[in-house]
Amino acid sequence: MDIPASDGALRHIRRYRLAWRLMAHQVRAGMISAMTSFSCHQLATLRRRWGIATNKHLRGRSPISLSRYVRPPRARSEGAVLAAFCRIYGVALPRHLAHAPRKSLLTLELGERLCPTYEAFCACFPQCTLDFEKAVNLIFALAKDELIGLEQCESCGATVLIDRLARRKPVCESCEQERRLRRALSRPSPRRRRDRGADARR
Ligand SMILES: [Zn+2]
Picture 1 (cartoon, helix red, strand yellow):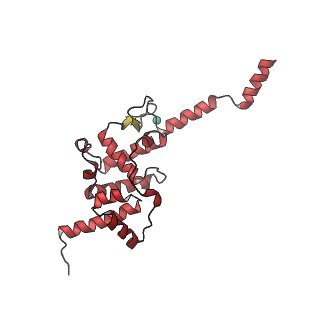
Picture 2 (cartoon, helix red, strand yellow):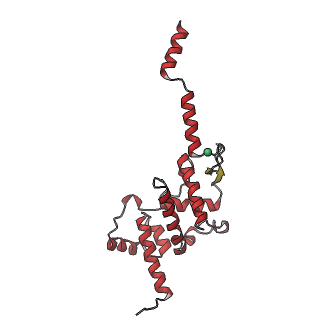
Picture 3 (cartoon, protein in one colour):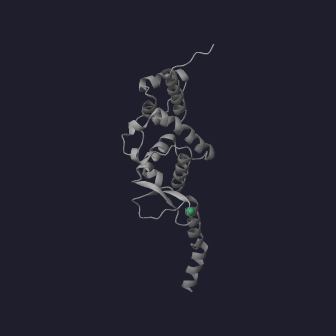
């Protein structure tokens, strides 16, 4: 016999599912609590019941510094790819919501949309350095479009993340590696330097 579930019961089930999924992504209790409305105490109980070990390094507040996203060339490219995934999955925050209180934006609905987006991103880039919380911070920062934004690599035109306050022009990971390689090849080898020194002494 089918028992029709009420909207409240269905929402309750969704909260449990999302909490489980976020714990699997090693998300801190504060963010899970904001998205699922479970208290930190309830989340600790669920962790014990589900046998999910607590990662000691992931206690406390979520880091919100953005500098790490735009400094390394790899992170600049990863951030741009994540932004593309967000557009595909319809997760990009509308600009008019970007300055709303962060807690009011961390909803069950946003969490349910973020999880498949982040999982698809990780499936395509298993070596990615962006964890779930960094990805959320990045999405919020891109919606504000103040400190960081998206621009084109000045060499190849690929989309990259940029620091809007930095003087350096944006370069993607691949072009940065190519530039380093060219610089290394143009530098004389120690043997050539020794030969030049010997020639000068003669
Ligand atoms: Zn490039």
